[in-house]
Image 1 (cartoon, one colour):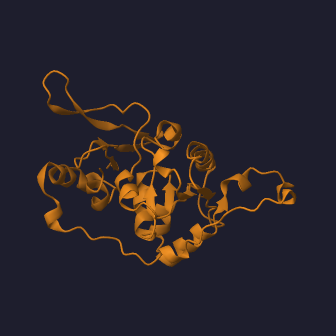
Image 2: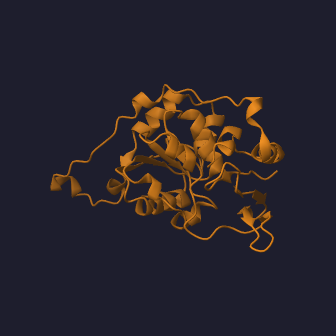
Length: 242
């Protein structure tokens, strides 16, 4: 079944679902977005994406936790897994695939400490570079290097499936390297630059919320109940979108 992640705008109703179809030629994303008909005024779902700049998946949590450090993952599945592993962080991603990082609105990361946790492959490296460039107004940006000997494409979802703990995931985040160091020349250390770093170890003590049945109310609850059996997204994440 396709995995679905939901991104919201300025409403408590989910306004974007992103089915992922896995086939013989790889994975394909087909955004499904909620629009209001200009003539009838009715809300309707359409198989098309929003125009740039698209809101981040996890935008509401950024607003709710304005001082928490931020982790950027590659894709909704990895993002939901990282939220379970890293409850002390706000975890976000850009919608509609890793190749669309430049089409997202990264301005909410202004002034935030940001760590990018990309997939362990070449597209992941490119995604990390793209996010580092697009989120240049962040207070600090660091990039996680995957552990040695992991499989191609390894990400937070794999870490969760392998039984990683919050402590182990937080340790990995704490080892992230400032983004500029990944492309710096070998003599950059001689220039006497000192990078500001953030201690993320204290962020491991928060508990991930458990969904209460009473939360599934109204239109938003009906929508989440409908897509949840076919979704890789966490129900808390779906309902918490603005």
